[in-house]
Structures are given as C-alpha cells and as structure tokens.
Length: 335
Ligand SMILES: NC(=O)c1ccc[n+]([C@@H]2O[C@H](COP(=O)([O-])OP(=O)(O)OC[C@H]3O[C@@H](n4cnc5c(N)ncnc54)[C@H](OP(=O)(O)O)[C@@H]3O)[C@@H](O)[C@H]2O)c1
Image (cartoon, rainbow, N blue to C red; front, side, top):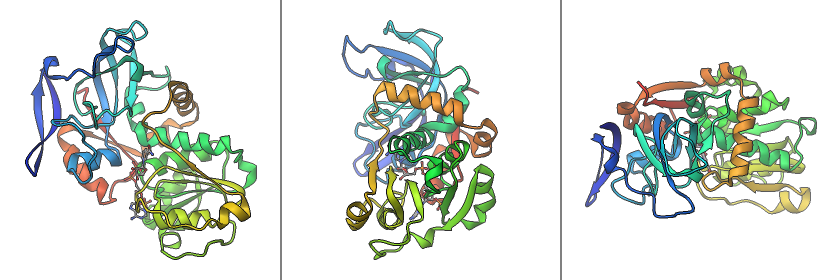
C-alpha cells in the first residue's frame, strides 16, 4: 500500500482526499513498445502554481478523473521495462502531462514512461530537485532563452517579475549567479531583504508595471526580462526593453491576456520569446538540469524552500493561489 492524494468528481462536486492505493491501482500510461513504462518510488514532489489550480479545481488542469495531481516528482526507479532506465536510478520527471492527463507526483509511487525520466545529476538530491521543481526548471529555461538571444550581463540589467514566487525566486538566484544585475518586481515590498539575499540589486514595485493602458514605448531600462506574470505587466515590460533585448515569457499570474503595442518590436527589435516546460525535448532537459546543478547555490535554494506533508497540499494550494507563498514548497513523500 502507498499514500496518494486523489482528486475526483461527482457531477459538479470535486473532492480531494488522501487514499491508500496499491500498484494495481496505478493506471497504465498507454501501450507503446517503443516507450515502455517504469515504476518510481517517489521521494519528493512540489506544489507549483499549476498544481494549486488542479488541487482546488480552479482551472481545468485535470483532464482525466480520478487523478493524482502533481506535475513534478523525484525518486528512485523501483521497476523498469525500459532498457535505458535502470532500477535504483535516481530520476526527476516533470511535464509530459503528469498530474494533468496521467497520474502525477502526489503519491508515493508513480507509473511513467521511461522516456519521461531524466537522470538526476550526481550533485542534486531528490529533495533539491523538487525544491527546484517545474518552477525552477522553467526559470533555467528562461535564462537559456535569454542566452540564446545573446543577452549577456554586459548588455545591462535584467528584470524578473513575480519575483517572490517560485519561478521568480529561482530566476533571481540563477541570473545573479551568472553575473547579471537583477531587478526584481514584486507586490510584496516587505520581501525586499529576501530578494536581495537571492541577488537582486533593485526592487521594482509591482504597481509600476501592472497597470492597463501603459505607454507603447518608455525609457529602455532592461536588456532582458523573465516574466511569469503576463497581461499588462508583460506589455509594460516590453515597452521598457532596450534595443535588441529579449523577454522570456512563461506565465500568467496576472492574466492570460496580452494587449500590447508592436512598437517595441518594430522600433527596438525587441524579441518576445515564449517559454514552455511540458513537452521540452530530452536534450534541453538534460542541459537544464546540468545547469541547475552547476549554477544554483544550495544555501539559497534551501532559504527559498519549505517542506510539507502530503496531507498539507490542499491548504498550501489555496495559499499559493492567494499569492501568500514565498519561493518553493516541497512535498515530502519519503518519511
Ligand atoms: N510556461 C510554463 O511551462 C510554466 C512553468 C512554470 C510556471 N509557469 C507559470 O509561471 C507563473 C509563476 O509560477 P510560480 O510557480 O512561480 O507561481 P507562484 O509561486 O505562485 O508565484 C507567482 C507570483 O506572481 C506574482 N503575482 C501573483 N498574482 C499577481 C498579479 N495579479 N499581478 C502581478 N503579479 C502577481 C507574485 O509575485 P510577487 O509576490 O513577487 O508579486 C507571485 O508570488 C504562473 O503563472 C505559472 O503558471 C509556467
């Protein structure tokens, strides 16, 4: 028997409860001889923004019922039909629809495809991998996107929006570790000291960027930006990017809308680069986890994360949606 968090629905009513399951309860992830399944003893998972939406049923994240949510997991391979994935290997799995289409990380066991597993770098523990989680992994994808566009530290300051959140916290730490001058935008100015401890040099009040109807072009303040907020914030950030700059856009904490001007694109050659995390090719995943291992200061990672029990996930999910969580939340399934 193992513990799991199960969301289910009965008509309009959606429930979210702890359940005791067996391996036989774990649904198959489909017949594909070219991509066999593996069983993972899950040691840690994490609560991302998307998990909070799934657990509270605030947005149609779950597409198959019942569902074990959790878009992230890290643990040890317990059984494998995949010759490329060895029993005993430490792996991280994020994306590929786990916690959305197929059962995810809020359980002590998970059945996934072998091709979804990424071997953990030796330097990262399974707990650290989930302190990073999809939020932190998306942060490094954003940093790589800026590097692809030649946004180097010499080009000027870079901005991180939603900076106190999970993605924002990791992005601030990663950029500052590479020598960027990092400006951090937040609606929680009382967290300035926290952001400075991660490496931010300037705090930008959320209200400076979040209003509707901003100017199409304004003073060019930043060479690049990592934006997890979207909506008016993204439009206002674009208007303040230097010529040839780039914004890596990956989130919608303010909203999914984007009413912006083409002026930054046609007068400053600004690039708006979309970043997704769910179906990223394996080579980019391996590169990303290697960079996280190399760049992320473990003391900073520890300072931005807290650990909870599986039973606490629903309560924390509500806090995430209320914008009251700082940094990252790890779910301990090992003890
Ligand atoms: N594209 C992808 O594959 C991908 C992957 C991971 C995450 N994401 C998205 O990235 C975003 C951040 O994820 P996360 O896990 O870091 O979430 P999170 O920990 O909940 O952080 C979100 C942060 O956004 C800011 N925020 C919240 N409401 C806001 C509002 N109305 N206006 C402006 N700022 C607001 C807050 O930062 P402050 O308190 O500092 O203001 C909050 O801490 C989410 O939208 C998530 O869906 C996308």
